[in-house]
Length: 437
Image 1 (cartoon, rainbow, N blue to C red):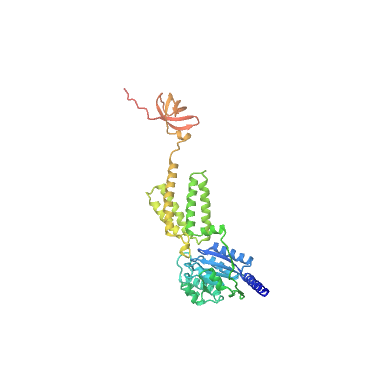
Image 2 (tube, one colour):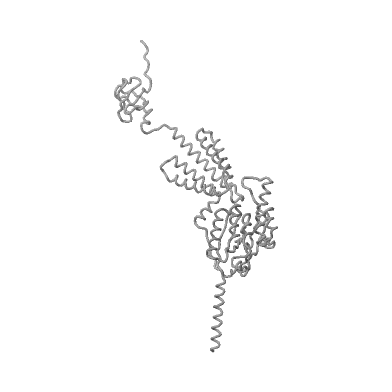
């Protein structure tokens, strides 16, 4: 009986020891999630995540990636951070149905571990110049530069350099299985648990030549979300949002100028324009498009002044739509203003602006109807003969008046000017001339 008890105790101790060893060997993984375009905000987010992983001595950084691509400068900056990271980086194209296209393909290939979920795709990494069609020389230079950048880290990661380069030069795309078969990625995993199980105990050759063994089975995963500031700024990186903010801000500021003292439209407009300018500063903005938008405002103002029966408004609307479409010259469609947005914003804005400008100019042309100036042109009744001075009654009040021609009591005179408390008047109609008898 005693032997049996000792055996049971030894088994329990062994199980506890194994659990402790397993717990000690299980690492900590910091998880980042990127779902959208690659831009300066996502680069800042990646930098923050890698810094946090280094300070917390994490065993790995997991980047869940789903992107159509993005800006070349932001992509290069992010890759530089991944290559020098002291913590191994796993880029996982996830969930199913996602893609890592264009700049996303570069980021995927730069990782220590490149993985994809079933039903995902990657590739189509041909560089695109901002500002229009490129000539043959510029096209070749950009292709060679992007291809050399790809080779610089793909070869050290032990992946297929030739196939990776074809995604740059020929815009080839690959399914998850094609990418695995051609050694562009390291594995396919249906979920995070399978990913960690497959990588547990794997030796990873780092970019600097060192090696590290991953212990990821049962690892504690700590999600690192974008800060509130980063979420807001990343939302503003959508060119459609930036355009809407710019138009709303311009309209609100115009309302404030025409109704001074209201304050609220001015504050809202200033904030909206400031946010739009910030976003456009980070995005590849076309200054030619800004010129077209300003030209549209000029045509709206001319319509209110000259009344061209809508011709100037139509021209301004066309310029506004064209300027909106060209405002952000992004390398991928997701980083450009959509036609639906340009139409939905430009047409109502053109009509509202033309209407407000017309109302404002008409109001300025109308005669002032209040104060001293409001008395000019009014009719008064003579109460004391004007010879040429006398008194008149105007709007229930008695005024001293001087007339350009004599007027008897009861006659009607028209006010020509107001000099202090005295009115300058003239008979409503000239006195009839008498025929000689």
